[in-house]
Picture 1: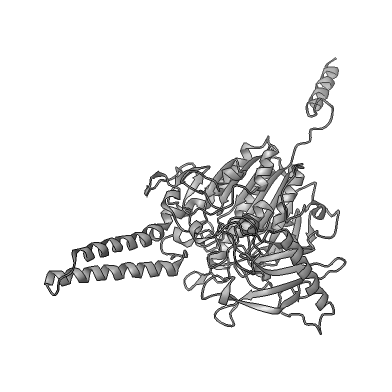
Picture 2: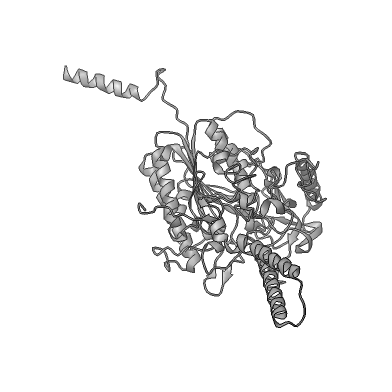
Length: 597
């Protein structure tokens, strides 16, 4: 009798794990996306680095799929992240630049990811997912007034946001210098000093009675000096207050932020989000502040690596990735969670000084780096997927893939079949699962701002990956491997060299882009140029050259969609009425309670 009751209870328990139809409950997968800032592909052990310790990242690769030709849509933060979020080249969102300013510079500017855009987070949110962004955003906050939050992560599909609406940059740490329009800062400062000296001189002349000076001249010069001081001092000298802030959802909770404890806080928020959503399908985008400068000095990692402070920071990143993986595994979520690791673009080669040494990443055998247009070192990044039970461990994919592929891949896995707009990415699951051997990316287009810089072609039935460069950045000083005079390369005017005919490389045989092909060395030379020219024309058909307004792109050689540019000066520069603030503007200031950390 007792054994009969036990058998009956066992059958009830088994039935509880199934729905009323008798079928096993099919729960949607979770997604944990982890992106490092400015990480070079050569910095990671599983991509060939044998001197920096990255065991946790390497473990993800050994337990999952490693992509060796994973390409960012742009070599800089703002356009690359816009493309990643939307699955579309950044110029479709108005986030391609035309001049010297290639990323958003102020939280108090009005530029950002347009409200009309759709992110993968918004699509998943519509499919019942709980979504979170922890870390860096750098795609704008407000449009017309403080608090409208039109560009904010909450408006782009993230149910929960904790982190940096801007980015970590040198101005956030005293003594690290300024990297926001430094030449303009100096010009305004010199103008202010000149006006001050002029005013003081006139006062002395009048007091000494050397000659008569109009009172109106005093008043005009005085107010001009005040205006010049305000234009220089308010936006630039108070940058740590304006840009270096932490928000929880739409509330500023720390201004300016304490950088030293930022890594622990971001990690804790990411882990807690996972724990809160064990029973619900979730998307976590963990967007690390590392390894962008200024580099952290966390005591537990300081001086532990063989590559100075940069190596210390990278080993801290690896530890954080390990903690996120440990959280997923310990909660029994591994077999139902797709984990993804990448960087927004290549390492910053010009980042170095005499005290710290090299502060930017290493891009391995690939030429160029961050902000260097279409050179491979600035756009080829790590790409690792882990999903036990779904993706074969240790698989390596050498086919061209893109960060923009995450958008359609997540849509597919979330069973989102609703109509969508023009996309530039492809679902990666057939490639990751080994169901197909070829990438759907026959052509890829590499932009430097809004200018089409290069095109890669992976011909059907061939191992070759040809890349055509229409122009390349001018490295300075001459003979250097980067733009050391300006710290980042630019995409226009005298800063680039146009090539006619274009430079042509075969990345399969020459991944470091060191041996340009010629008609006498490449039998398919003419065909390659012809096929890429046709591909460019087909690509341009998907764009609209009609100018929407005076604020849209107007360069004759640019690929200009009919979307308002978010990178014009009037949208980039600081406006007091748009500045996020805790407290009463301009007396902004608050600190997060971190006693629980």
